[in-house]
Length: 410
Image (cartoon, rainbow, N blue to C red; front, top):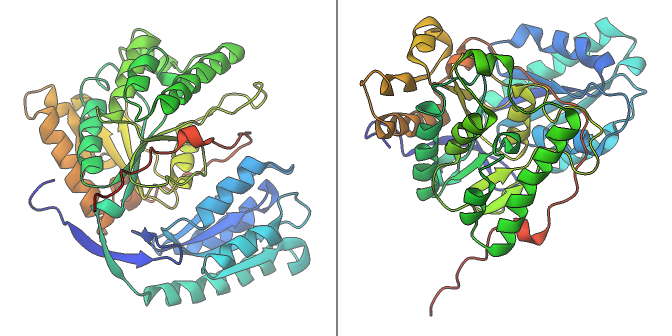
């Protein structure tokens, strides 16, 4: 941590004991037919903390419901407006009940019962206005690093990603976990070949088995789909093989012990380092596990991530609803070209203007500053991308949870 970085900051307390670093109003559409109305409700409040999330599907899916439940009760969310067409399969009453039980104000608008687009938009904006005013006076409490959950993902990777940004994030993760924080990494599709090293870091033998199987499942899924996690842009950026990409992606996890394995919507049981398995369970039937980076960001957030460290070599401009996205740029040329979209120039490692430890320290410092209220580049530019589709998962078993803490000696 840099000496200038805050060690404590004001945060928003939630009924479940967690704390938020933002206090947004989430407008959630429950089917694609309600998406436009939700967007119109939120449109006037682009700089006032109103974010749109939702599920486009008309048919039921347990994963999607779990995702929305977790997102609508995320610690960065202060109030929720559900926008329903009226005939979709997602159980809106159940979702409203879950949000209400979390202590948040919640309202459901059903377009088919409100008289259509204009009347629903008007009612939605009126409700949002009241919530914005109420949230402005919300109580604050003190929060510190050991109460933070941080996720990481890479996108638009190139030949520099595994040399600069990714290992720098790994070192930052080591520091954050060492300070009592919770860190989540994922992308098992990009860890094929790294499974033995990953398993060796498991805190229990049973967890090691689960970690190996998560990577094996990803490989099976990739073979079934006929496409590995290696895009044309990766090759154009200098990556030569999936093995090279895997090593770079894996380096984001750092070197410390892996405490547990989770799936989308699982909240880590306690602080530590966790692998998020985002590849669906069972026979491949949902298409590609993640059609774009925004899906993975949403899944990290569903596990309670307050903010996301996004590494990129080619350059990505996406942000996210609900949680800030911090861009760590691996390539110095990309940073020079897209500097307004980037937060950290990890490419300076290649030009001799810094070391991995320097950049890792900068990342940790910026994490604290963002938690304390500093806007990231994507937040300042209004990026609030969000994507959610269909998947299916089995619950995690006891082997996936962290090893019991040692008993105190009397």
